[in-house]
Length: 354
Ligand SMILES: [Zn+2]
Ligand SMILES: [Zn+2]
Image 1 (cartoon, helix red, strand yellow):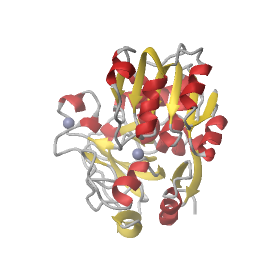
Image 2 (cartoon, protein in one colour; image 1 turned 180 degrees about the horizontal axis):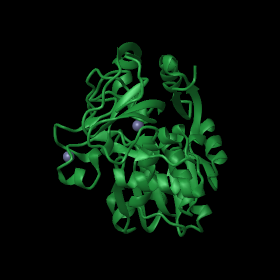
Image 3 (tube, helix red, strand yellow; image 1 turned 30 degrees about the horizontal axis):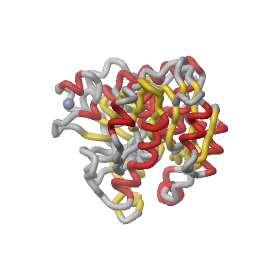
Image 4 (cartoon, helix red, strand yellow; image 1 turned 90 degrees about the vertical axis):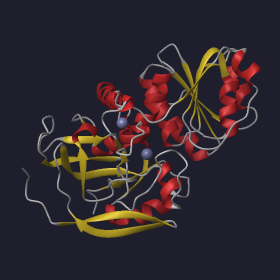
């Protein structure tokens, strides 16, 4: 069952060496349990840069790249439905959770496809064709309905970054009683600020880049501090000398992680969301004697992403407010070039732009 579709489409691959390769390929057909999406928006992610744009590296379990169409932050509209799909119809707007797991292991049963260890695990844009094309086949089990209020660009933001941010906040049980320190104000840090506020918490954002500090003020961080040597002292001053209930590291840097542990108050929660790097710290004064809980958190589950979509709809929040640059699909190379400067907010391919 499908509407009339073209036979060929434009897609983008990342062969390495900071290149984007435009290819013409057949429009794929949805198999059983799958839908075909007309892509509407797909954002670029720091992980695309780190692991496949410059060189193909494999440092984070599952970061293999198999010469596929790139892009793992997809949002689009259903234009064809495969056999056995009951909950999606032609015309439905969806956001795609960006990994398909085996479906039968413990983690898949919980909806944490990201943690699947089976060979069937495939991430869109990494091990199976992704979002940087005119069309994409998605497993219905990875699709989430997008409410009318949320745009396709909002959907692309949710598919990876906002989902990751929400999960970090869930791990720390953030609510209106908390002050949340957000260390590092890149796209995931910005998402943490926005969702923490939606959950009723106060937020303190820290970064070293003026552009990102300014953006954090714009999206409503209650306090924004420069990430220099005095920032922990400033945080202490702002919290009556006690520290924050929750500190979330989105910097992935040793110094950022250390400052999160320093700035967390007694019995507080610290979450490490930022990838890569290392950290060394003295457990006794920084963790044990403060009775801290330290969480590692990676992406989210399909179910939690669905609840995040509900929350954003109910609170009338557009995640696309963190997009600073938009490009049409055919200019994906330019999008990566500017994104690689590290000075942008979120960069998004808008498939409807000419
Ligand atoms: Zn991503
Ligand atoms: Zn699995």
